[in-house]
Image (tube, rainbow, N blue to C red; front, top):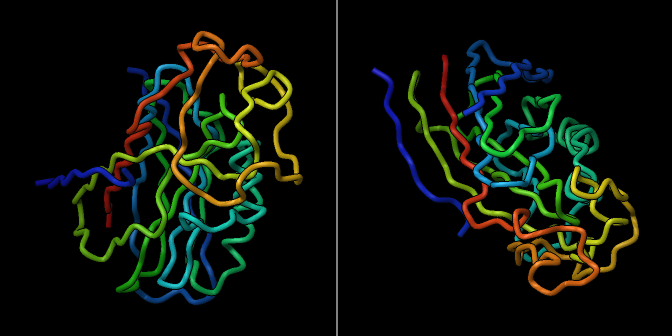
Length: 232
């Protein structure tokens, strides 16, 4: 019988996409398979295509209080996971990567299946952009998988983070999502240059006259639910 556990990390239409992970040269004889499902809990914040990374200890997608990598900046500002996955694939601790190919609308879910050689210190990292923001994102960094048994699921509520690479101006020129269609990734950094909790959307309805966002684009934490199921 499938067992489930549930907790908070970091403070209906079903849209399913299945993409296999990419193996690295250090494959072992034992392979594990996971289904990773991301559910968007917001009212009006679509989530960008999800980047999923399986890895051993020694790898981190981000760390609170430190500067975001250029690849994380590209995802957090433009919603594009390619650079983050390429950087991960080149890391010796990473065993598999996968990506979704579509955004996740509010209230919807998307699933990815990813496989990896089995290691005792195997962990999962995941990142996706809140696309109606300047550089907001959510996900997991180095979630341990070693205690997850076959057919067991773990559900984790995740908060919104700020990459700290672009000021939260909320203008039509700088927000790339459907609410604005502005610029995505820009290598220039004009914010605190460290990853932290997202302060939230102000919006034009709450007095930010230059904002292209309205009250519906505000969000509370948790912003998403991530469910990890070990299939084999």
